[in-house]
Amino acid sequence: MVVKHSTLSIQKLRKTFQHVIAPDDAEYDKARTVVAGDIDRRPAVIIKVANANEVTQVISLAKETGLELAIRSGGHSVYGVTEGGIVLDLSHMKDLQIEPNQKTAWAETGLTAAEYTNAVSEHGLATGFGDTGSVGLGGITLGGGVGFLVRKHGLTIDSLLAAEIVTADGKILQVDETHHPDLFWAIRGGGGNFGVATRFKFQLHDVGQVYGGMLFLPATADTIASYMSEADSASEELSTIANVMTAPPMPFLAEAIHGKPIIMAMMVYAGDVAKGEQAMAPFRELATSYADMLRPMSYTEMYPPEEGEYHPVAAARTMFLDYVDKSVAETILKHLQASTGMMAVAQLRVLGGATARVPEDATAYAHRNSKIMANLAALYEKPEDKPTHEAWATEFEKSIQQSDKGAYVNFINSVGEDELRAAYPGSTLEKLRQVKAKYDPTNLFRLNQNIPPAKDS
Image 1 (cartoon, helix red, strand yellow):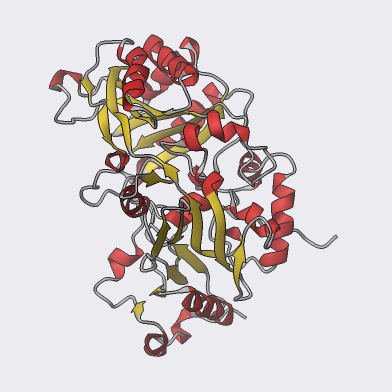
Image 2 (image 1 turned 135 degrees about the vertical axis):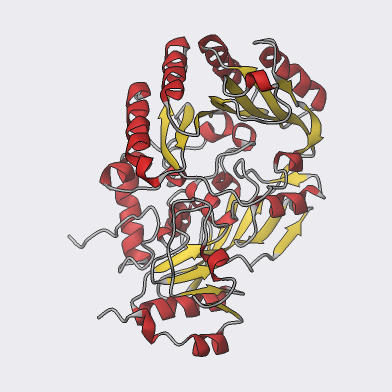
């Protein structure tokens, strides 16, 4: 029998936990808000835990009441809040133990990518995460982690040495290659299906000054195709993210450019600065730039402070591509120009390098041979326009689909069997279901890109 949340005693919970947020509290609305602007769920209670022991207590509470359990780290996941259930909020868990000599760090999962990066940068070190500093370490790591160091140092999970996981039975497990290796395999790409990650041990890499920043170019079929070719043939020190989009009214872009198709390239050369400048030359030669912000910089500058509360609503798709030639680029531009959204974007990330040198079955992220990650999105305001933009996104995805039918789990928000098969191809999904059945047989951790446990044969 599922017990209704009205039976929860907030008063009793406050005797157990230091930070309990109830619907009547002033901070409730802020605490329940996630980045996605179309998520408006009202949990029965939000508990900001202080340590792994409190995580076990919240897990017990969820099992006792039968209430849905949401796990929140940085708030970027649409699954970080529940309707009528319990939110286990990790944002107070920010302990970071850095060992510069060993080039390792133990980090609690309430830390954001920027907080971690700023701290370890004082030692000239870094671990690669994504492209947004406010993302929590928990979600991005468990899904894989594709960012500014992906070609030089691989995915975030390729720098994951160990983890502390609280499982559905309340046990606090230390997992690595030799301790619970099946679970360690699963959390490297399998998402939050197997427990609550409370600490990660990361490998740190020598990343001091880089050559990077943003480069704004006119987006034509030729410049897009040439950009992608240059990014693919560049040395592994260079990782890039090409956002093909209509130019927003940024102050450093001439007004005449606003609304025109551009490439907003985010680029990092993680190596010798002089060589980095040389590596950027082919991109600068593609066309006369609208703005050139590439320069020697601290790696931390790729995570600038984020201004204001940004809660976009978008119709989005994620996929992998084998190539982007002139024909594909023309199709991309055609669909971007056809969108009636506030802004339409195709984000293209050339992969390869260190990511591709890890065997496909070494972790639950099974897209090691994928060439390009593409994210397609139309941002809009009016809820009644959702069908129009979703249809656009579906058609856009279909029009550029190639042989690689995979998808990156961290960018999947609506999950069915097809989406799971795309995220976990081949035997990966069946193996994950077996691990799920072992560590979470009742599917307590189901508010995520959910992998149901394998059934007994």
